[in-house]
Amino acid sequence: MKAITCTQCGAIIKRISLRDKVALCDYCGAEILLEENRENIVEIPDHENAWKSAELYQPDDNSGLDQTTRLIIFGVVGTVVFLTIVFIIAGKKTADDRANSAKKSFAATTTPGAPPPPFPTVNPTVYPRITYEVEVKWIGDDDMEHYEVPSIDETKLPTGDGKELKKTVFKNRRAEVKITIDENGDVTEAKAISGHPILKEAAENAARKTLFANRRKPTTRLLTYIFRLTSE
Image 1 (tube, rainbow, N blue to C red):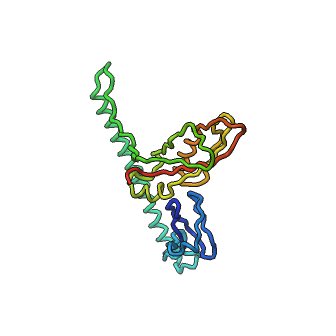
Image 2: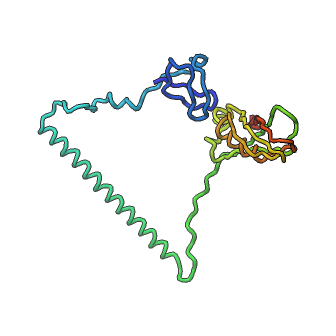
Image 3: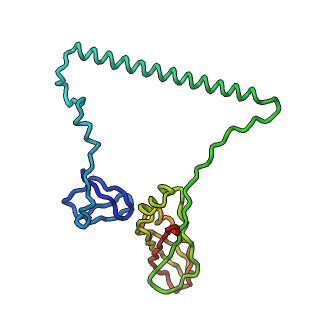
């Protein structure tokens, strides 16, 4: 099975054919020209069909085993399954006994009328912190009155490692957003048409909060948000 790495977001595009001219990335929607990126095409094993070549795979009943051998095999398999179920039930009972013992110990430490001691709390998830700058560009009149800085949802970042961020999210730093501006200068529609999904989402949200000067009729404009990690 042949695959290629997306030049836009770094995702792996599987099951490509050298007879095709373009490979479509399901993650960011980018189109990769195969002719220009032949050196990036690699051969990876097809794990979905690898099991069919295993020694135990039998497509039909011509195994060559007699009935007595089959009965022995079925008996061994049934015994293993039975013992597995017994061990699972025994383990669950042991876990329940431990839980009940812990509850009794906890109740013994409390005094009547006094509030119970608090249970230990789990530390909240710590998301990666990144610092970045954004520049916005467009073609047309310089009539922007309020610029909203895009805020990236850090809970959706793949990792806090700077190299990983550059390789995936910030590899394609640009996010283009098509907007519609009404007579009052408010953005009534914003649709990101290119860029990494995380950057597109941040650019769309910022574009909806941007204000422009008044105009005689609604107009459309293409805003280009350019993201840059300040730690570079």
